[in-house]
Image (spheres, rainbow, N blue to C red):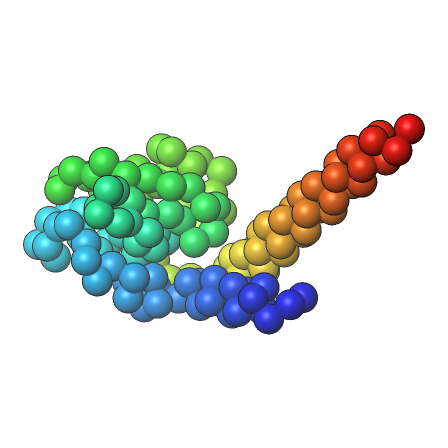
Length: 142
């Protein structure tokens, strides 16, 4: 793994912790008094990835599901389960502070596996691109 991949691994692993997820919501569109608050989104596994074009865009730290177009009264847990029923974190249906050690370890291990899958896919795509370039170059030599 190169330095960039190691940094990505370290940063993404921190998102297992609700506190770190909540820290990403510095410019969340709703206040803490509504159902769709930054705290409730972080509790439901989301990190903020929005920008000025998509100010309410979030993604799950584990299943990588992206969601936006939130309403103040949306329930983050319900929306997460509705849009990503296979997510291991949302299927547990409980915040980090009530997870057993085994549940937390299983989630963390799944996250590590998901991160490595992304890294390997990126590397495979790079190799495939190089192969295509070599094939193109060889075809010009015929």
